[in-house]
Length: 390
Image (cartoon, rainbow, N blue to C red; front, top):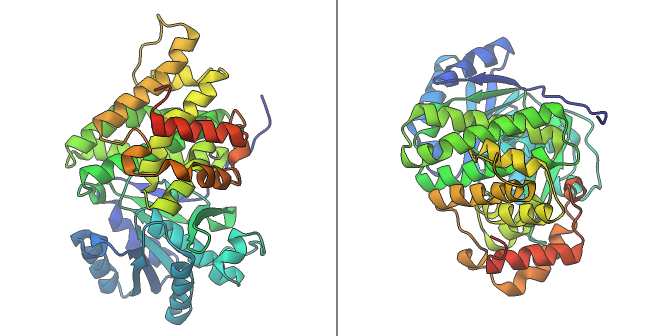
């Protein structure tokens, strides 16, 4: 067994009505002023968000709301948030929403503490040395696991790249995971975020940096998603299914923040940045094609993935069982209406070259269990247009 390190410093409060823990957390830390970061969507108008603001007000905790975070937050949005954090003189940050507000909150907090601009960190011109103010994350979707990760992704609009920064000093101090907040997610958001969580778990499971702890977390997340995503998609008010998906997202986040990601994310990031495809959908399209690339070289962990998704592999050969992981993922994708190909989301084949050039620079690409050269990336992405090997 290879040597490894594992850590997660975020304290997790999980369960229906866990949102009630926010005020006690703030009081316990002496927090009196908050910058609340959320998205531009209906989240900020939700009854849960308004109730949360009321609870904080009754506790005498002042709140400044920054609700300008778009999907795949841009460098400009991060810089705007840094200015607002400085103006507000808040002594803590609360992120309320999906992965984008949580990622933006991490970046805003980090840049404010360390100086410069977010672009300095995206391109390695500055290093992170300070942790910033206490960050509390409250996810309203079950996909990114960002509430327990050290990573944040920012979009550089000028280069049309999505670039991640990760450092242990960016970890949230607390995560409040309340499945009740997820019950209003539309089916298409449930599907995209659920497949995002599945991708995190699968990539962490097969990663070069995987270890026994991350394997245990990742395979449990895969099982929960296989058992619950369909039901959450079709019956959004089922709190048991929502709880399972919320737990799966969180567990997958803990797995990949330690084991890392790989080629699926490397390819999905330029797809999202260049064509506005949601991160979960981009991951969902590419996952089977990248796994097929791994399967061609043989990867015993694919059998475990197939079994975790409910496939009986006892009468299958090793090759058949490994291919079963792809079959099971495609079946799940079909049942929750995730597109099969890049053509299905109107991406032109002429984009193959630029997508692959960007993917080749992904910092975690070497963490893939089979190392794709540029020609390999072109084959994978071309297959994702033509539905080859599926």
